[in-house]
Image (cartoon, rainbow, N blue to C red):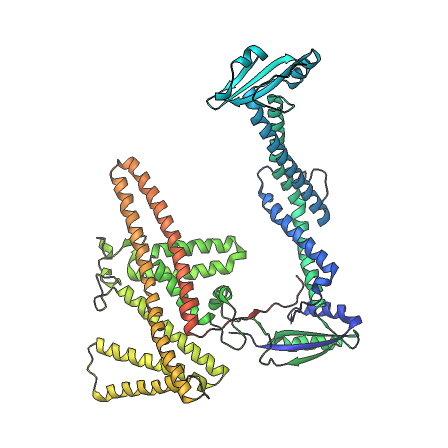
Length: 617
């Protein structure tokens, strides 16, 4: 359900404005209506935002470093430095990263120089320079192999250094005043020897490899400092944004501020404000107000609120659909998984993670419920780890094998019972969604605006009852048939002439006919979408059975002392892969059924904005 809200309007003297905001923040339940004007013009606010972004970026880099394997004990981890302010932490982090960038660029340059020197071997460039002092000149050349001229050897003392099918590297040694006339590219080599470059590369790599350790040592002091700074900056930015929200009145001597608070908290807020002598007014919401949404559900439905928020929060004047779709979503997940063994793994994994990961407690509790749903479906259908229990010759199952809901035990007009179950559940959810829509429209606008939807709901139930009675072979008297068709005709009147109350009857008739076409075609597609619940569960069970067969065939072909190894590997890998794929499909398709089929038939509008009280972190 949606928490009822009250509108609060405050009128504050400009000199007392900051003190009032601090007091309002201490109450911690008022959602202040934020306005954007003036926010970008505040230089201090922009500085805080820029600093916050820098701190978050640094924290994102440093926090993973706390688990660095080379991290020393906390006593000597800081290596004599004290980083007790965010400025020092950021400066040190930026210095380390800047040095890393320089080292990486240096390594790239050294790597290029090494690649250039490698064909020429390891020699000392300074020895080449000494030849100039003796009146000789050594030049380095490179040319395509087909362009090399043997006459260069006799004329200029060419010495080949390296040759392959593509290229020849060679040198010439001549008097310093001789310029060889050679049709080749003269190579300018680095001023270091190959061994010197290798030494520099090793030193540079060592410097780069030391960066994580430096960051890890910085993280010990820096992470707590950055977290505190981020919290303080977010509080300050939030305060500044709210401060700039106030509307100036009476030549800037008064400031007007608007906010929203849960109705049950208004008395406490009023008491706090009366004690502080603040002028305020409490108002009921009116159409057109942008009212924040605070969902309020029981412990079970609350677990599914993230799914509602993923699509959109409801607007203030409609119903919260969370509790309405939660049982269906849980059932859909179980039908898509379809394997009790997989459900047990999900339940145990979420139970373990719920204790180890308190931050994900809500999601793990949701996973437990989904695991329970999968276990129940698996037990009803007799599917456990890809084993169909109604087909195995286990004596202890002899008394219950006929109870499993399988094709061998049951059939609905020649169709699989699970396919019929999936369609039945889909029809039930669609009808439930239509009823949900009727209640919403009746509450918002009045029952006359819901007559057309009531007609559709009743006529569909009417037709389903008639089809069920005929399928069951029940003989219906003419009076019962007349009653059924009479109800259908009355519903037809509602559908065709009451779909848009207050308009011309001919307009209603045209709109009703068009709506009838859309409803019938849409219902067929919606119902067929639910068959995938059966198909996904069937596919997961078949794939699990295939991995079982492969595992025991591979192991059975080998001696027992070694055969267990491929069997265990295939079982673990196969069922692990199948479990992963089943979880993905069991989440995606129920979400689609909820967001598309259910929300459409329930007339869910959405568009709500989350309730975020002005509170100090």
